[in-house]
Image 1 (cartoon, rainbow, N blue to C red):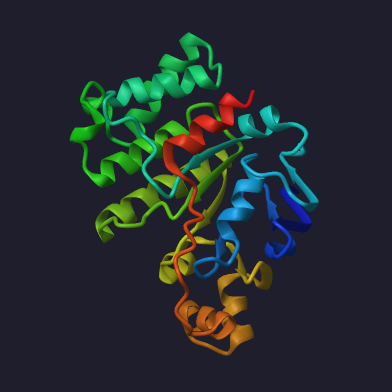
Image 2: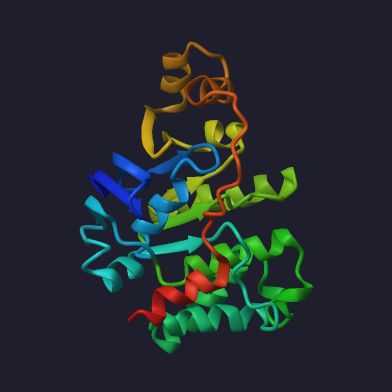
Length: 265
């Protein structure tokens, strides 16, 4: 059963730029799904449409059986998100960041306090709950962002390059948390990454987007077979070419984007 269905999705900016061009794909409930592409390929624009931050020019999206363009609140309650850029308030404690998020999502107070304790213990930050986030390492901040994204019991967790800049030990630790959550709670995980070995090891299925179009999809083994390559990185380069791409600047823009979801209500 699909939890995300995207059909013939289009996003135009002005009269000339087509950032997403007739894209179709689906994500099964409980799946770990990787959405890959070079810089400027259309990944972040697609994610912004999935998460109510942009309206499509054409096509349709169903997320947990809701339309992000028409049922924004229902969609927002269906997902959690860890942004590419830092989105925590450094001047608040870990607990206060969690509490603020729970209030935004209207999680009842008793449930909110219980869930905060459970998740901070899960990501091994309960003993640092009263410390200001500005004192945390990059890995600790990522773990806190994951805990925060799970606070309201989402069906889907979006992760936009969640391990960017993390050392291998922290990356491995973080994915162990996420795979355990996927197994125990059946949470669907939708992630982007530029680490091909990470996608190969973690994702059950992958879609590759380039120049606004889906150019390949399948399991990691299927993609390697389609390209006739031994590694996913080699397959990715075969599909997308070796030309260096410019940074698009389209990453989900930290705390401003997170709050913007809710100031539109």
